[in-house]
Length: 186
Image (tube, rainbow, N blue to C red):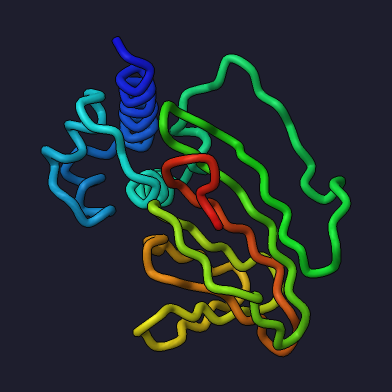
């Protein structure tokens, strides 16, 4: 069994355990995440590796954090991104999980009132954006601005250039980005 197959099987087992613990059928879970029962079956049986978006939807539907669905790594390094020195407005980026050919990174971004990220970002994966404090507006090429109040999360693809602008009271934003290569968020 490859490392990816092992991870897919572990994620599937966790999804099954949490689903059963909540008394849900596969069909119930599929309806909650907007997909089909066979798709959920394929995840639970480790035949497919769920995307970051699907993993987030599953976690929300099962009322658990996404990390409860991920396999436990053999070694866990804990990083407090606030402890690393950086210039004002500079985002803290740390790689938190790497599978062969993939990178999953977290990024903490603090923007002052009305501040715009200096440049748009693109990457070949997905991204979950969570506004922790304040508010922000997501600006994506060829799309209308998307307001994001505090406590809101949003899934986006990373291939469309995007950046954030803080609201009137500034914003603290956590970003989890997936992609291939060394940097998922450039």
